[in-house]
Amino acid sequence: MLDIVKRFFNKATAEVSKDANQNTEHDIRVATCALFVEIARIDEKFTDAEMETILSILKEKYGLSQDHADALIAEAEKELEKSVDLWQFSKLINENYSNEEKIEIIETLWHIVYVDGKMDQYEHYLMNKLQNLLRLTHDQLIAAKLKVLHPEK
Image (cartoon, rainbow, N blue to C red; front, side, top):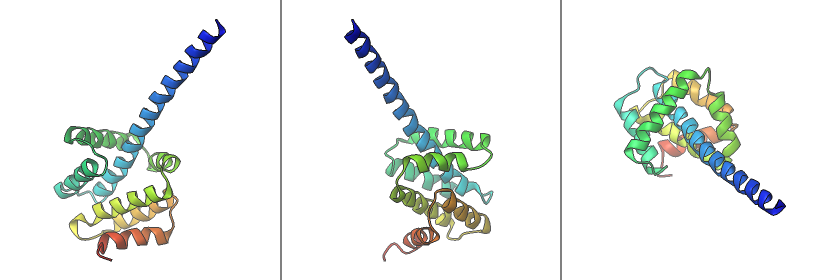
């Protein structure tokens, strides 16, 4: 009888753990997408080119369909509206991504910044803020920027 109870609780715990992992993965994607959306709209000009870039990144890098990418952006925008700052998103990323993965996120953010060919003061401010929030060094931030601006090197 005790074995039956143990198996039940082990199975229930495994199912809860599986659901928690799926929720965490979803939350991390929302957090990452929220950073993409925020950098695109920080200058108050969320252009079609920026939206297409984010959609392309979500489809190519994360393997999402158009519908899933649209839904993720919508959810990220909703979460941004509810948030006071970007700390909650960066905290989730810091807890679940390696340093290399965070650098990839920064590279992606630089790519979004330079879709229009220039960086304005608000984008500059936000990139420096995100460097700190994601616990990256200034050298890592600049190396990621140079990699995006000069991919042939």
